[in-house]
Amino acid sequence: MTAAAALAAALLAACDLQEKGGPRAAYPYCAAFVKGDTLVAFPFDAEKATVTLPFVPARLSYSRDGKSLYAARQYPDRRAGISRIDLRSGKVTAVPGSADLFAHSFAVSPDGGKIVISGRYRKGDGEQCGIFELSGATGAVRRVPVPDNLDCDYQYTWHDLSLSPDGGRAVAFRQVGVEPEIELIDLILGTVTSLGRGSRAAWSPDGKWIAVLDYSTNYAITVMDPGDPSKRRGFGGTGDQELSWSPDSRYLLLWKPCLLSLGYFGTLEALDVENGKRETIRSSRCAVNLMTSGWVSNEVIR
Picture 1 (tube, rainbow, N blue to C red):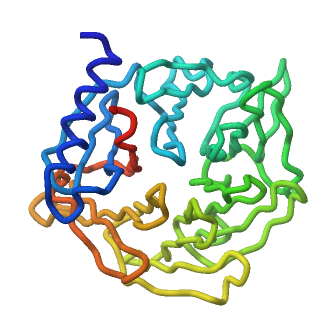
Picture 2 (cartoon, rainbow, N blue to C red):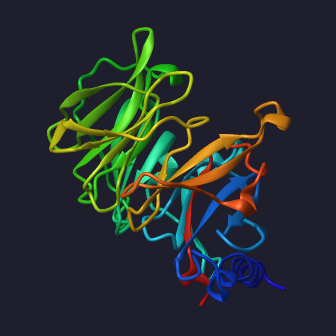
């Protein structure tokens, strides 16, 4: 069986069983996470399934529609840049121009036409650090004119970039002083605005909300209006720095530790942002130990 066929078969086993019944039988997405070269799919009402990816990602980003995975390779193959893995066919496509960029974090626009990277841009003998826009079509690189107060230290760069739906703005966290802060970055003007302290932020695919995890012992969840950050809703706490919007902006994917695992392994929860209710994704129970989670679409196996 080819790698593409194995991927499709495993996702079918993990996701398509939802259609046989249960409270989320018609929901078109599965939670997932990546460990090594393995993608694990977690439906609401079926057993988990594992598939083998073409390579081990060092950094990764799920596409907004859940049909692709963008990944940068591990050392020593990181000079291969960023690749797009099509989850329907298993095809791997290199993103042009990405081999000159080393990403601490990156995010992909909904149409895949732009990749925003926090990290280093190496060209010849020179190197720049900061935030860069990479054209997914041409490979052209533009440095975002953010305040030039960065060095190349991993600790002080922006992490967990998340893009607005139009690709014009991003949110990320950065170590500012003693505690990390969430910052809103205008990618056109290069302005940076603090949204307060926090350890992670994620922009909803419909553009209506920015979800933030507070930097605290229980990682308090706040959802704010991007146009008026003073308009906020609280949703209690979670176990760790897991925060991923479903492609339809209905759920936030959270992580809850399992006590018997001493906190090393946990279970994924889906938080419905409309009513605040949480649902345990039973197929993920005590199976997730890396913060690499996201959502995949059932359409990739139809």
